[in-house]
Image 1: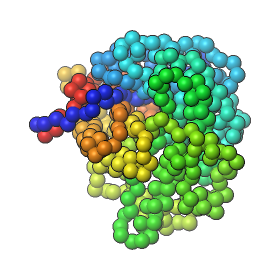
Image 2: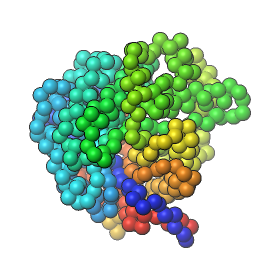
Image 3: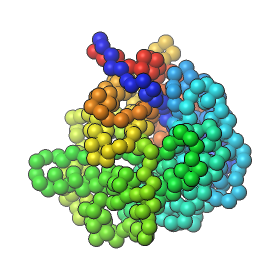
Length: 451
């Protein structure tokens, strides 16, 4: 058995999101979010499950930080609930909500854990949705005001900020596929929402730099997915290029180069007459390149040409492949692929893996520990690929497991478990998983044990 040693100062962390763990949906002055409205709409989640209580982290954050300390985390990535801070989306500040995050951050710092704050992880205030949500360009300006409030309040405690988590999901899963809040089904709207999310990101970066805090850094987290053609046919090769443009380049290019990919802009403008990009928007994006890029990686996709006119491409199910409970193929080489690709094509950008993990049933408990050997194997294989990328010169600065706790997994409700700790949702008891113990030893060694 040998070791793969990670660079000194490599940031080992885990991640969560506000609506997925906090609960206390109607406490402490919090306003309604689009996910409150969506999850309470019949038929949107299994059995009508909601994030009303979730992991009750709002009341149990001190105990949860204690678990993080036992885990040995150097950093904890969490998101702020916008409606907990600004119940109306803008205007009057809810001091009780702001204080919750101050107390959480103080608890983290007191335990030697660096807070990494995500400003937006999909829980838009419902009051803003009532005025058009992300389809309304003014929501980007509201986001800039919200970001400025948090920067001014927390700048002395937080040095790593993430503006938006996975704008592709917020735009397309929420506004084209309809599987996430707000549950719309229109690609033209999704394209416009995506643009406004990126504009909001750039405005927040600009605001942060106007209020710069010494060594503080700000970035964005994109979900990147390698798109592989199903075969050698030219039409399938072209389908993979379009699929990559749709999910990866459509966000990578404007964030890191200040321009949308020409081929996809022409396609979307011709077919969907979207997005509408106002004069000066690309200049705002180009002049506010982030300090780092967060990469969320879970799997790859295999695609072929579409057989229906309403789709750009068709995703193929690799039936014989190993899969997680989410039916996602286990493909660790894909993490190496996206890290190398960003390093090669976009240059001079520090990277963090801000999400990587897997859902499994996690039923077997022995001697008080959940025996989740599949998750251990998943994390180990992906960290091997991360180390491989570092050895080849990729500037990877840290790695965050998704997720610290089992939680409300959006449209899947509580049926999918990603946590390093199991949560009994009736008692709120947290139970160690073998993956948590394995991760603790990896962090302690700053190295991966390999056969």
